[in-house]
Amino acid sequence: MRLIDLSQPLFDQAPNCPVHPPVSFRRTADHPANGWRMEEIALATHTGSHLDAPLHKIAGDKSITDLPLEGFAGLARIADLRGLAADAAITPAMLAPKLKGVTTRDIVLLATGWGEKRAKTDEWLKHSPFLSPDGARWLLEHGVRGVGIDHYSIGGSGPLNAETHTILLGAGVWVVEELRFPAEVFALPQPLKFWALPMNWPGCSGAFCRPVIEVG
Image: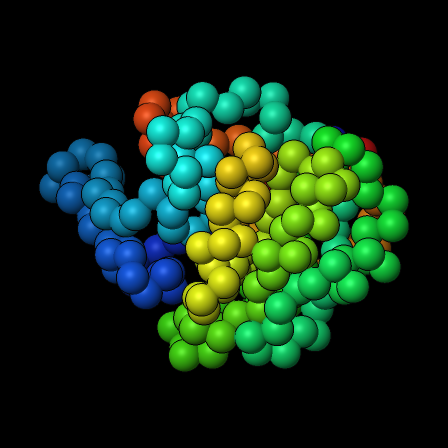
């Protein structure tokens, strides 16, 4: 078995959602003075490669640990949308030809190419492509259980962000954000075996994860 890593690295001052606290990694012990090395980190739960649970948007709904762990692993299909322009809305018309084989309980991963642009730039922070509300409804109509994207917000940073999140999370569909798609994944036969297991953080609206594709 081989695993292809789809996660984004986290490090001190890593790019993240601009309304969240800056990412901080601080070394608190080191060799030889302390006899070991240790770090202290400070960051929001929705930072780097992470999962959104329904509670992230829907008051009183399920937290990350209320969702069955098995639900975060399964067959996934990648919609190759690389080349999208800034602020592009991902619509049903874009999804349909890219996801012809999608079936109930599939996981859909949206590859916009913006995972490669990850940086503290105005373009990446504020002008990413995003899943439109109509696109979110199209995915629900096809019975998907999880949706991912290679940016920190599946709904972008504009006025439709909240609606897209509400549609997906309100239907119990989890979201994985801040993916990165190595070029090799686009040559693999679909569907793919996908894993994105969250940290065990009771009551939290989301959690860090290590998204991978299993090969072989």
